[in-house]
Amino acid sequence: MARIIKTSNLSPETAALAQALGARIRIARQRRGLRVEDVAAKAQIGKKTVEAVEKGSLTTSLGAYLAVLNCMSLAREVDLVADPGLDREGALLVYEPGARRV
Image 1 (cartoon, rainbow, N blue to C red):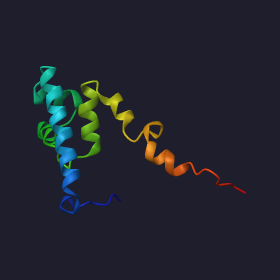
Image 2 (image 1 turned 120 degrees about the horizontal axis):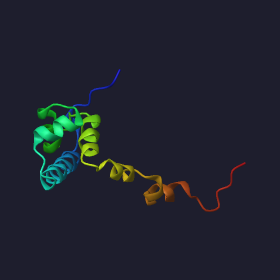
Image 3 (image 1 turned 180 degrees about the vertical axis):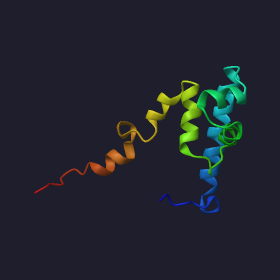
């Protein structure tokens, strides 16, 4: 069973990231000349869910965000999120010069 995360326990930075993402999604919808109702129908989710995505709601499912992005042909950009090939910090942590495995 999924664990529920209290949004009050999340940092202000996390909330700001979500709100910024929602704002970018709203701009993408508006640039495409789509109404909230159009996106809801294409993504097969409710109008209120689309509105929650555009507000950056932290309690809205990742699936809803992905459905909205996908219906606007923006889902491939999600592949860049946490891409191991772009994670310089992670690569530096894995690479340990002089370390030998036995």
